[in-house]
Every structure is written in structure tokens, then in C-alpha cells.
Length: 304
Image: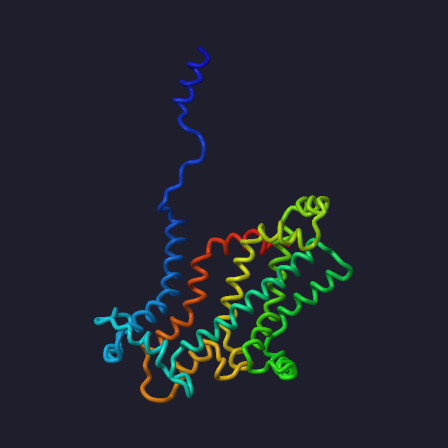
């Protein structure tokens, strides 16, 4: 009898809890509308670059930059890659691409490996003066690069690396150290300390804990570090134009030479194709590992 009255009471009052929100509420319309406008704002220049790079110069001279190409041509891409003049050489961006690869790979590997060991040591192996060392290291991230250009020129000249690829690798490795050390230190600090203590009890040493415990658990923050370094190093122009020479110029310096060339007719389609080719590597890496990037940022980059 009691159960019957209870069910009847429930049926009369109906479901409880907060009222379901409508999908097309005023707040949602405002939110998604704003996101749509911001997306269009950022994607419109990219759209113009893509369609311009697929047009011939007669069609570009008509002046409608937003219209899709009437006749698609990939010749501007071929010219930008293998034929455009970047100074005294007319081999396009291909030489600069391989120079950038030779600069990028060792710079990323060395800076991330050293910074990960630094962050691991500063978070789990406290030593006398570690906090002072960490503070001095982080201060390096706030020193303007421009104030250190000339001292680095003198240093690279003295060690016979001025104008070489390995000189630029050294510069990128050093300048990437502060922010990467901060990221790795914060991430390793967020890992439960019990794992570290248990490994110590089992007899594991500095490198044993690093390779067997810390390294496998730090994949997300490694992805964050890779994306940050690849983006910064690949897109760098200032260090590339100062610390290398024409034979070892990275891709961004050669792109500048193509776009700002004053000889002959201004080929806007080739310029757009060259710009897209230069930015392709960071975009591919980001889209391939975007989820791990967000995960790594959320897991360790904002903790300390």
C-alpha cells in the first residue's frame, strides 16, 4: 500500500531536477556566433593565400582576391619550391627547407632532452642552491633577444661556429632552455611523489628513475615541448639571418628574399605558395598532435 502511494505521488509531481537547457538559447547563439566570426577572421587570410597560389597572374590582375580560381594551376608551387630566386641562387625554397630541417632536428632534440633532465632534477633531486639556479634560469626567458645578439656573435666567432648551422643550433638550444625547463619541472612536480620514493626504495638511481618512470609518464609534456620548439625554431627569422650565411640560410630567410625581391614582375601567386610551403611543417605537426598538446598543457604546464 505504501509503495502504491509513493508511485502515485511521484507520478503527480513529475520529474525533478533542473529544467533541461535549450540548445539554441540566447547565450549559445552569442557564444557560437562569436566563435564563428573569430574563426572567419583568422581563416580568411589563409583562404586568400590558398586561392591566390592556385591562380595564374592574368587572373590575379583582375583584382578579385576572394574569388576561387577559374583555372587551377600548380605552377606557382613548383616555382616557389624549385625555381624562384632567393638572391644569387634560383633554386627556390628547396635548399632552405633542408637547411631548416638540419637546424630544426638537433635543436629540438638537444633542447628537449637537456630541459627534461633539468626539470626532473629540479623537481625530484633537490640540491643546495637549486631554487636560486632555477630562478636565474627562468629570468633568461624574460631577457629580450635583441640585447644578446652582439655578445652571441662574438661568442660564436670565438668558437668558430659563426655562420654555420651548428652555431644556430646552439643558439636555439640555449634560448629554448628556460621555458622548457619550467614546463618539465611543473609536470614532474605533478607526478605523485610516492612513485619516486618507491623507486628509490627499490634501489633505482637518478637515470633509472628518469628512463623507467618519469620518461614514459611525460609523453604529453614532451609533445607540448616539441610543438613549442618546432614552431619557434622553424618560424625564426632573426637568428637565421644573423647567425648563418647565404649557403645555410633557413627557409624563412629565403622566403623573405623571394617576397621582397625587387627584380622583375611581382608574382603574388608564387609569393603565396612560398608562404604556405614555409608554414606547412608546424601546421602538420600541430594538427597531428593537437590533442596531446592540450592534454600536456592541462596536466603540467599550469601547475607548480
